[in-house]
Image (cartoon, rainbow, N blue to C red; front, side, top):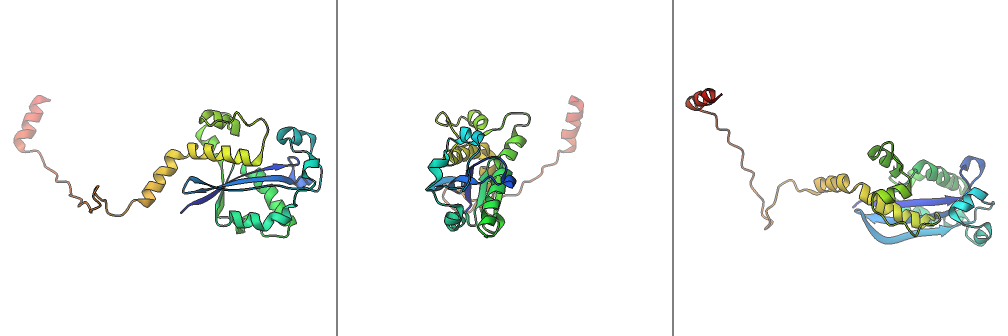
Length: 217
């Protein structure tokens, strides 16, 4: 059974190295490429103010976050949620850097010790659509995902949209791979009985047939 967690974050700014922090985490679970309805969502008190530009993007005020938990208070719940799953993130290096910083500040092991890996849908989109816009909004439009309710960025909403985009973007290749992995060694008939594979018999042309063929040519 393949377990994936589609994840998005909102932050106080764009630079974790300069002290920007995570203020929202939104995740949803996919089991064998099917949404389960199992969500993880928290607003977080970053213990610092958000940059004006960031607030214009996500619309989350400093006042709203004052009574929210710190990351360290929900870290164990977050780790349990993502444990042994593959993370699916758009522009993964950005979110991963922030999450690694939050884990380090909470004196916890890095992401690699909790999840099985990270899949970057932005990298995948650039490979599939080189030279085109590959933002989440652009991909929603390209794959017919309704994002009209996305006036501001929100971690859980963006994770839900990304899940739809990811499934649409990988439907052909991943479903084929899953079918190949799940295909039994012996083919079966509609009744479930094994089908005997009959070897092809090669029939060589006779001398007379070759002569007629040469005459036609």
